[in-house]
Image (cartoon, rainbow, N blue to C red; front, side, top):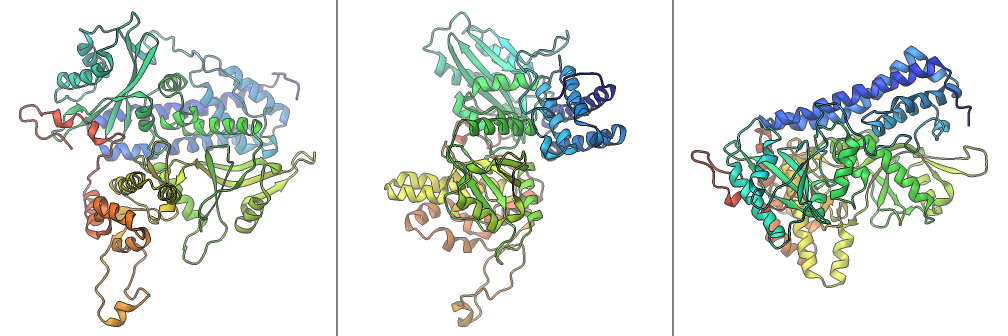
Length: 604
């Protein structure tokens, strides 16, 4: 350790400049998030989607600005390490009473690692562990809005309290019939409260900001009664008449987990103190890792920081080795995992077989497309890392050999500290939640004779494709091995190297053969463009098993018809934004929501 002295004015100025850069980032991030309310009120869905994409880029832009300023004004890269340690200590001092200290520390890390060499990526110079607590942070300004509001209804006043909860968000757009919708919510809640004694502490706590995503706004809170807490969320949507409706009431941890799934786009939510929001959400979903909650509320860099800390902690408390991931090997990505850790690690190979006409840059572009797009609960989020160091003795030899063969440019093995302890450094990788590959899941179901399980997952597979179609995504390679099954039985796509926007594809019917020779030909005899897709050719690759084919054709035969794909493409090109719900359609109140006089039809 260097002497911990704070005697360098330069160090303080650098620390202040670094914090200025973060404060500018969070101010812009929060402003864009707050604007989601107006976009929701005016039903400007295209602007909402555009803002969700663009906000993801804010962080890297601000980091680059900060690096440029530090280099130009302070020659930061030329400063001795003693000064850099003092910079960190000054920065910690500046975070006293800061409202986003954990995010500011991550920003410090991002800027510092752009300037310093990798050999300095340890606790003396960056925040490997947090230095400032996020517990009990409060905004003490008189006009400040608290993180959540508490309501204390009785059985008799519960309906009017529900109306007041929604009214307090001050949406500048009329409801079709808020009194009616509140009654639906009350009936849903009554099923859980009617036979329960209301205790002295009976209350409803609701986060002070709405959660905006795509075409919905969500009230998020919990009902507290005695020692019991019941999480809930109320989705607010526009109906076809343009009025607002409460679409359903979601209850319990599992339904909230689906709402905040890693396979969905990030929420827009205006937060003064993000750690307080995360703490509240963790009380609703205690099994959900904090890193995934930070991701869900749009703070993906903080999510990456927490994930990596969790990962290092897991490595210190485990002894199994990284191995080649089980399953069919991909032609583009090399995948490995640690059996005790619920994620997979994916490297882009250095070379691909001839049938894969692509490049590393194009594949990275596909993964960025998914990151910025609405994932509609059907595409796994990815964490992207560079220059990741692992202990060499945690790797199986077969995995090292595989990386050396297929991705040698991504591998470095070195003894950084000269102590005989080798490290494996992976230059670039993606990390995703581990799921059961759908082909393996199906095979296990067949082996167990579980026909109902087969039927359910084949239906889910088709639903996953239809949800992606609704979001303007053509998955490209639709083989079973490119989809996974989550803990909740959802089917999620995770292989993105052939993904395309639906609107960029040309869906065609296979031409009629002009003669017997063409009909019998084993080769494609008709002209095929680079973006041409022939849906009727999916069948032979997907439906070789008779049991699978029967279920698929009963529920999803239209996926083999180019007219289905073309119709969706035309609707999207015409500006239509589809509804994709993070809950089952059967849960919706819509069948009971009769529109007000002259209000028109409620969206289904």
